[in-house]
Length: 400
Picture (cartoon, rainbow, N blue to C red):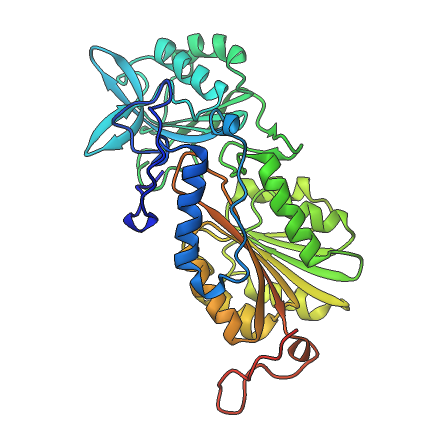
């Protein structure tokens, strides 16, 4: 995880390092805080960054104390060879690898897989491993090479079943670095090509999944109740991933349309949300198709769910949603309060009301906090009154 910003404040309630924590690791900035102190710090941070909406900002929803550890089933670890210690896996700090082989935040199968790799993986002259990526039941060895010898992994394959891993991929990517994955060079070395997560969703080796299914389910329920998908309703799901929310809209009988950039996630979304339309590409690239679907149907109402990366909504997409597509209701799940505040201000200027902001502690032990913002277009604007006057300025918003 990224380093903690200084504006997150200070909380004094601390505890000793959890067992297995590497003192030099900076991945979990709140690891020495109690759960209460950690959540309080996140709440204080959100109150500052989202001060404009303090009246609708709810308290942070979090897991119980005993669920703060062992939850990370999706990790990317650097791999380095040490002549004395063999393979080591962890995080880079000042060009040095900090090993986190027994990290208490990692799931049991991640810890078991790392232990197996350290005892069975051949040295870099035979297998030039650069990164280990684990996504649920799927693990990927990213090698900085054009090809590797499959026979060099015989000892590793023999022990994989006991780790809980269901599929092992070898990804040969000679330029792996800031971009971990390339389109080519993938090879399923062992096991099944896909797995099922806790919600029964199909996922592949590079798919993103929320790591706390019970807490994520609470966010989905809030979004579902707000968007109210039903027959005759159109729901646009942007950055739809493997289709966890897209499936909700389709199962409710709504006309569902998803957009996702990652090809593997698109394939899974089409399986997980049968009946929904899923297109691959950036949301900006797919705006022509979105507009055609949005304006071409006979929908009684239109809603939108967005789950963008930390950078927030793409500029052209934000403009299109606020001034052109103008869904009646929006559910916006954000992993950055800063970009959320920026985007909410644009929506408000276009006639939307922020009804509530519900924060979720999806990454316990870290400084990260995500927020679900629920927006509604004012009734007069939803009925067809232009959002902007003849001078191009936003009209006075009419309370819903």
